[in-house]
Structure formats: C-alpha cells, structure tokens
Length: 341
Image 1 (cartoon, one colour):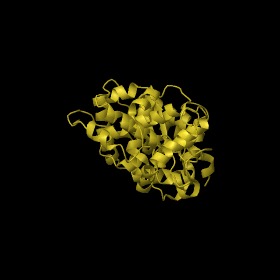
Image 2 (cartoon, rainbow, N blue to C red; image 1 turned 60 degrees about the vertical axis):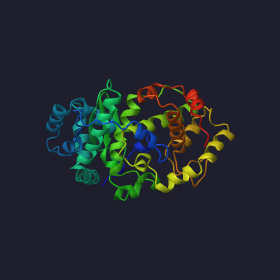
Image 3 (tube, rainbow, N blue to C red; image 1 turned 90 degrees about the horizontal axis):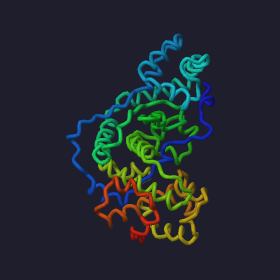
Image 4 (cartoon, helix red, strand yellow; image 1 turned 90 degrees about the vertical axis):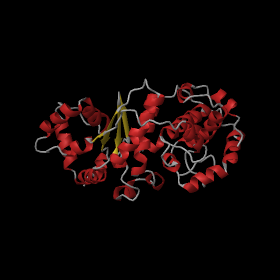
C-alpha cells in the first residue's frame, strides 16, 4: 500500500469552516421556521465517487471520456484541484488515474466510502429542506449542484460556479481504521455522517456570501457567528450539537464560562486586534482555545460570535435573514446587541 502518496501535507476538514452553538439558537429556529413544503425542489447528490471508482483501469482514457460526457468540467475540477492530477486529454492523466485506482489503500477507502453512502437519502432529505428554506429567504440565489468525491482525506469541500462537492471519505465515522492512524483525535469526532448535510449547507453559505476582507478579530468573529445563526435558521430540525461539532459537555462548558471568555478577550485587548494569530486561535479547529483554557473546546470565538448575533437579532425582531446577511457593520452590530454575558 502506498497511502502516503495521496495524503495531504495538512489535513483540512470542513469543520475548520464550521461551528455553531447549543444556546442562543432556539430563537432563530422558532422565528424563521416557515412552511416550505409547497416549494417544488428536491436536492440530489451526484455519486461521482462511485462512477470514478468504476473506471476500468485497462481502459482509463475511455472511462475518463465517459465521465467527462456525464460530468463536464467537474471532472477536471476533481482531477486538477482536488487530486492535483493533469486534466482530461493530457498525456499524463491516464497513467496518474490508473496508478491511483490500482493502489490497495485507495481501493479500500473508495469501497468503504461507497458502502456507507450507497444510500444517501437521509442526507438528501436534509439538504432538500435546507435549500427550500434558502430559496424562500434568498430567492435570487441559485441552488447549486451537489457531488460526493473522494480526496484521500484531503480537501473536504470543493466549490466552483454552482457546484458544492464534499469529500465523503472524510465522513466515515470517528473509529474508521485510517482515521485512527493519521487524524488527530479532536478532529475525528466530527468525521461522521451526521455532519454531512450541515457541512454542505455551510460550505454553500460561506461561498455564496463571502466576508469582505478584514483582519479585525471582531469582524471575523461576528461574521462566523452570523453565518451560524443563519445555518441554524435554515436547519431548524438539526440538533444544535451536530451543527456545532461540540459534545453536550463542551456546550455546557462554554455557557458556564461565557462571561469569563468575554472578559478575557476584553482584558487582553483582543477584540479589535488585527493580529491573524488571534483570529486563528479563537476561530479555527484546535484541541482547545489556547487564549482561554486547556479545558475549553476549540472555535470558542465562533460560539461567542453566535451569542452576540443571537442577542442582536432578539433585540431587533424586524430584521430579516437577508438584511442580517447583508450587514457587515460588525461594530454597530456589537453595540446594538446589548451583549452582556
């Protein structure tokens, strides 16, 4: 087996992008829980990973031509952007794909991925409900095409024009054999089927509504909080701890220590910092939030941002989700939130 040939230099799961909270989400769920049953939309996930694995390694060129006819430029997006192979028609791509598909470890991972996601009706049902709500609240934004791919635990999400593709091999369960060998324990807990639907949705939101450039921690924190407030509104039937990627105990720790977390940020004058290390420490995945406590979970800044946005929206009941999405004045949002944990 030559698994190392296909492993990334840095493992970057989608949970780096995604965080939410247990507390403060109920108001958004009740307030924006509209009836979308009449909207004629059904989301399907294209099983690209199955079709790619089915390529006959004795006839790779024909197999790629067939896939290109079916998937168009998405095939090149996968080959070039995800796997860093050449594109269809190049002199090297046939050999690259053949070697890849003949690798023992690669075949094992493909088989397990296909086995677990041969039936993805549960994921499609959740996506259908969420994107009906997106269509209801944001009718001018297109509904993308959804795909599953295998990246060998590398790029968990790939987006392009009207495309959101998720690496299904990053959601095989925290006890999966290869995860135990190469993935940190604090990341494995979110590498499960229950995270797939919300990760699709948050990937779409972050792509469709990108944050205007800003190095200020406050702006990044409230942008994350805003996006997760909207995520909870779009997925009112999803468990908050699934959206968050926290255990119930981690949720409880955050709520119990909310005031101390906020005062720590203020006391260390971090709120208006433009030091990228501050945002990284508070917003990205980690075993714990280093500026807070070794007992804390990672991504506390996003959790706190959601608290502030929730308070802001509770105090301004007339604001719609599109209005919230368009509001990038995070200083004013903070001031008008009346946030005092």
